[in-house]
Image 1 (cartoon, helix red, strand yellow):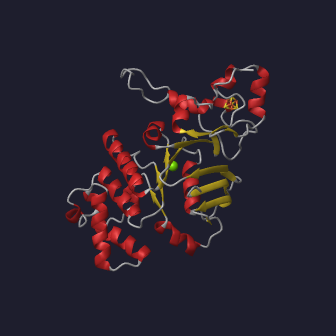
Image 2: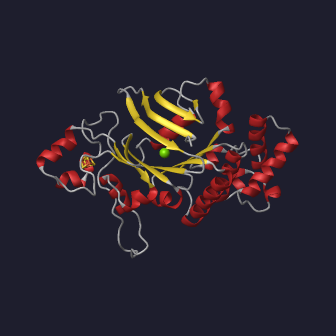
Image 3: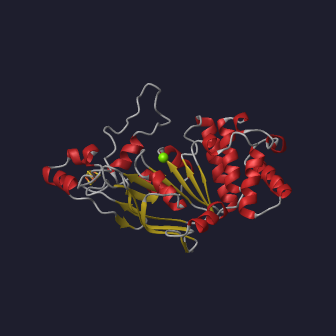
Length: 330
Ligand code: SF4
Ligand code: MG
């Protein structure tokens, strides 16, 4: 069947005083109903900009390419139309629920108001719906807690409130940007389980944005690894973990904590810093940090630093690298 969300050649460019910054460069991906796409990358990789662009939240940026939701083209839609779709068909959950919740209204009022705006429901019905939603996302004593204010909730419970708010309008697509980053490990696992459960029950398409491959391993079906605004690698989650082809993905995997690690083994972070988007290098964005390029012969290294690798697809696995792993060094 047709994917619910289809993104083709999405490019987002911000004008800055120093010149244009291309934060996302010709990105393409699909997300089906009941599927979760994990978008992984460091800060500045373009993953958040991608989700904002999908939601149509990019005033000031130049957005080209195509974003279709259930066959409807979203790029170029009028703000009024987009507003109608946001909430009704697609919803977003952020890292910091406190900044998205109003401090002076009870969480019940906020969820109910959201529901009223998008569905035109009556006050009493919207209130009932808010309590139902709080119960559905696992908040105990939902009826009582609906009358409490955001600051009376713990971080994890607040994130549940945000998820309840997102789901109150029964969207088809949920975009979650680092939804568990601010939470401790146990609570993080609970929130990921909640997202997975709700997704199954409602057959939602989910885009989960994270810097943490560990999070991706738990919930994603497909993975898109971004680097410097570009797709570095795309694959089903099992393939990505079993046979990563891009040296950057390999580096991310190597820096994951492992169960068999003893506590005193330091994690291996990828040395170096993310590329400049203002003055992108002509070759592969990862070249200055790439151990594979560093170990290669001069000709190969030249190719890495001079020629941008194209995203090459074989089946459901795509990689942008002149020297993908799993292939013999020429
Ligand atoms: Fe490394 Fe070259 Fe592949 Fe870029 S193209 S990831 S520099 S091997
Ligand atoms: Mg971000």
